Image (cartoon, rainbow, N blue to C red):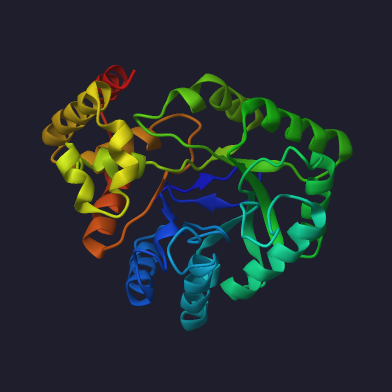
Length: 316
């Protein structure tokens, strides 16, 4: 499997990342272990999580996903060098634990390292832009963590092009570590936000792009085709906004391409992203081994130009 560089971080990743938001939420510990085993054994290596996963679930306080991954690494220590471990900081963890101030980052990274049972985080990402904190302060804190060997590289998520460009400029001017990756929302349905301004910036600056919601909350798998389907999953409610004329047109194009290639709509949707210049690895989640194997199959699927053109047109 061909690895792709993650910006200028020195890290290389397979063309599909595992979204760890499900660990400890819709996938229990035993299931999470089996999913992680299968993912790594198949040659994939980027595991993305965040400290806040899964604080939204009843009875959860955040840190559940990192804790599961940490237990898995303790049980399989040899896997630590086989993976690129990515997590995030900045979302509201409650009790004032939020944002990107230096004092909070120093505290939050220790909490994440403890839960992950790891001496380092390969990719530490600003989960959300914090306009109340100067970039100098945030990047200086990251510089300390990199110098201490606790973090290898940093990335940004949920940043506008203007703010990302400003962060890159500050890093260059001050001689501080720069964001090497961007994690934007991007898929066949949600295109405009990334393609208009973020994509040109990331390609110009050589940033790695690891987009989230690669399957549009599962909509692009074809699982949800009517209001009646929304009850199939606890995540179904987030799909309602895709059930419109354009969304159904995209599903029809996915069905057509999938049929011609003997693939599934989910595989085609991910393969379309993998084929886009400048995009490093879409992030997708799975809660069962059959589902994971289906998603991993996208890395072996090469879309012909006419299939890409059809999907481009349907999702324009």
